[in-house]
Length: 476
Image (cartoon, rainbow, N blue to C red; front, side, top):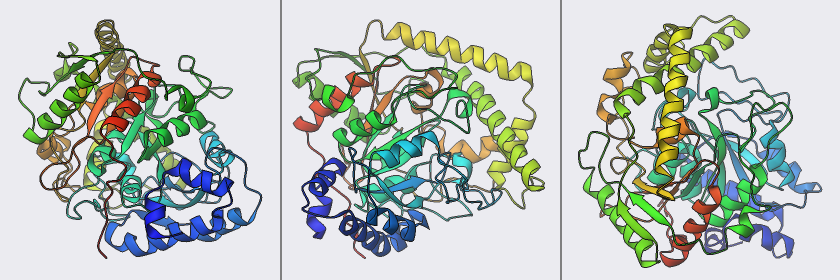
């Protein structure tokens, strides 16, 4: 397979070539590995190679699924794949091979995907950039000195550079949508409960986090949701019912939608001009397609939401670190945790049960406010980020005071964590690039359980303003 054919084809397209015997799974894997070996020294996207196991998979009887024979990369957070380590990007987490597959990993395998490595993440996925001591910084394939976003930054870099057509990702505060925005990709965060976190967890980060993929095409994301959708026995809750196939149902034209758009941050200040331009372009595209578009935003008290979010976030971090400490005999300290991680860990250790339960009550108030807003509007359109991708090094990972550490990015992530709180689905679409050639994504948010409306509109926008042919061609 030639360079141009591989990058011109999405995951479903590659699977169709395999099904038609135009190419073998082994040939696809060979191309993916060759691209990884050539591009990764510049990107630092792939941090664990599992080539031999992948070769064995391609030589065997692959399951007949939506992505049979398609090369795939796994994010180094949450998901377990038997025989490979998942270290959460942390030196504190030993490189123990997993003894079993997560339920989602089992579904990925049944779909015929061929995993051949793990992708770069920041320590414990805590920040909206991918820079850490264990793996080093991942580099944005559009401009190598810029961030890929986080925490699925390695996955996004690998897809944007054409190493794989789609890659596993997860999202606890924007970690699918932020890298998708930074790297010019489709990134859907599903509704809470749509994808099982089992068997190792009932819910990831008390329901804030959920898994799916980053991809270059809407149909690949829809197909991935078909694979991932569905609860497993023992799950604490499930999402509302889904169509028989998101992939097929999303091909239908959406109804005439009422879409609200926002171009200001929580404090009412205007965002970066590139982000304003991205929203204006997306809003015009929607209006040209016949949808009703008007400026509006839900009534959310973000000044209260941010500290409340940190209570849940830091409390969960403290729990994870303490569990690893107990299992491994380590003592958490700045010697084995990055400075910012240690500061957040200490903050989490001070969270009381009362603090935690009150934070969950606040989350419920926010969810109800968002639900009320969506009684009027089908979708909410925002910039995914408050500015284009920042340069690497903006965050001081060794600063132990979280307020000081996050100060340079205080307006960088104004919207994405809201949907982790409410459980709503939200999707980043790559509809805009700035004058520097950097992607500036926009986010569409739907009511809880309504991924289908997002995917239908996304397909409509993809057809009217195609982006697939545009990928980051790195010169190495």
